Picture (cartoon, rainbow, N blue to C red):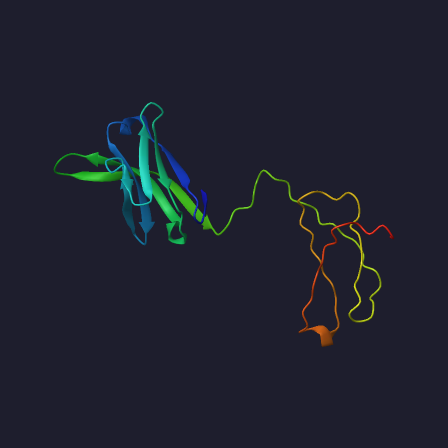
Length: 168
């Protein structure tokens, strides 16, 4: 499972039919221990909430505002046993990877627009150019403008013309 910082994720834990009448929960592995994160008897603890759909045999755990330390190995489990002895049966392992940002999956990646600049002009002279056709809307344009070492610490400007230059 992949989660992104600040987003909400859902971990689904289908369980075997024999666990239907027992409490269920999500446990996080830490060193040699399996610490309970949330159980069906809790419904919500801090950023974690849990729900169970008994008809489909699935427990769902939602984690709001995912953080880096949420990453790790989790187990879905059932609380088995009676009054004097009880234990957890861990039945599904989940690896949660937390990433810093998400790239939109549904939008195609844009291809860069490539073009050549005119020959360098003397210092303080504007360089004028036009983008090639087609000009897709909302596509980022990256400029790489070489300059000589004496201009390294000088301020550089890029201007956009409001009206097209008819003289070109």
